[in-house]
Image (cartoon, rainbow, N blue to C red; front, side, top):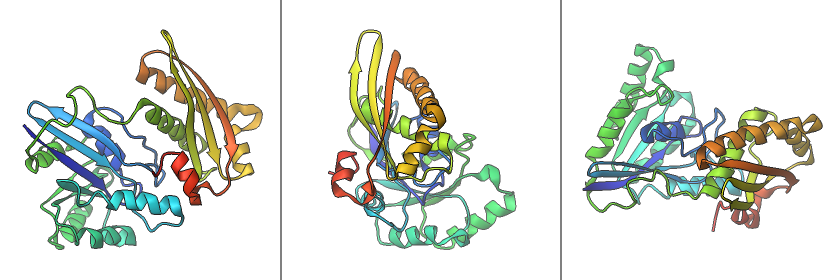
Length: 292
């Protein structure tokens, strides 16, 4: 069979996680319209007939402002030489900002083949897409350039077939019936964090982490205790909301998605605690699973 690893890279909020979910046909990575939603490299596993492709969804590459940012960027760039193919995702021209040019300079130094994916084509006119295509094509860096709309499922088959062309004879790394290697505890923590980002919109920045303190599977119910950490007391009040309404809304939304995932009733308890400046603490980053 043919198999291999594919890194999905790009600046924050270009649709990397959405693209991977679309390829797999299942949600394995959280998605929001906020940048830097993905903090860990999340593996999605595509298996069909004699083909297995392991997609590594990386955090958005950006110039870091704290230790968490440094770790996220190191996680993303550390995949460049360890995979068989790099999918570089963009959603506009290089003139849109310095982020894409910053990544391009990094990619010039690697020998791994790179395919460019211009995402969000549903928001572009044909002339705009052609201009972006030609701008990147002139660099001469890409084996192929594709256009997609991950949210609309446009051209996803072409992404799959193109990636398959770069796979070589190899083993089946994972059983054919799984789509991610991430443990349920991790996926549950990510679902809760996604609901926080979606429910609170722009009120609370990304200084939020979720730690699963208890995960117990019983015959007809799964009991989960989760602690939501934030960096400021004012943020704690925003997460809880007046009369606890926001925290209840976050919990209800998360519980419904977790129940669909695990196939049982879920009893979910959540608490909010303050841990100041945790994004610059090596100990906190290790405790929250962001680094060893």
